[in-house]
Image (cartoon, rainbow, N blue to C red; front, side):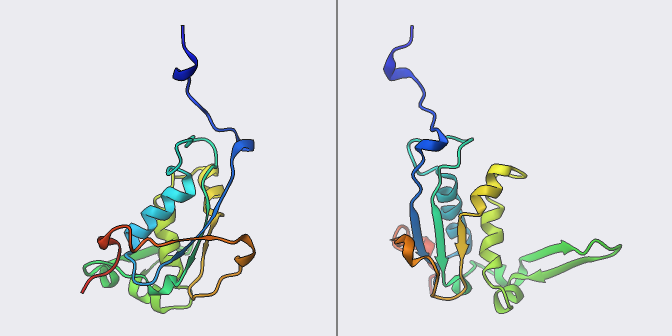
Length: 160
């Protein structure tokens, strides 16, 4: 016989209350920041986390063009894609992407690769990620709560 205290709690989609958080990515390490964002998007920071329910937060990231890599990843990490034509594999280093037209794609890809693979739930959760290359964003009306990721751990920022 089970008691009331030993029952597992499952979050219902109607019970979910999404918050808006704002993160300034200036001088933060890409991998550590992406890991933090993926955890917030999925809702794993909540005690009521349910794997099959979208109970994460909306995440706004500003200054995505000012993120850093550790070691020599900026020059050595390569992003590949295929054009669809024979012999159409293309590549670009992280350095070229950050200096290019859409520098926020580096952080977007890092977060996307930390989410569950090939899942409709992960695609829906990725829509709650809003990344901006500069310091301005268009979500002031949602009154996002600012989170200082740099102060959580000294390894989150680039040193030296």
